[in-house]
Length: 121
Image (cartoon, rainbow, N blue to C red):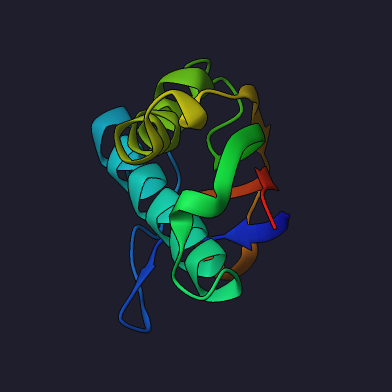
């Protein structure tokens, strides 16, 4: 199951807008990535009729960090999403991962993540 880019939006409200390394620090961006991962799981749950137990593996997670040009700690930001997936899914939450810097993200979000999950019928 492919889940397209999720941003830190809570109850329809855009959260964690800004530029990591300028208007936002790594810890705030880590929290933004956690919210993104929660939204990934919410999308997955909606597609699986609420049954996250059907997820047998998280195959890949990609994280994009809207950061200043000389920012170098992208993995620490995306750890927020990785840590949440492992906390919720256990061993099934371990994944291959890419953490990338971006010159900008839609609507000024600091972080965006997408994922590929293996699911059982």
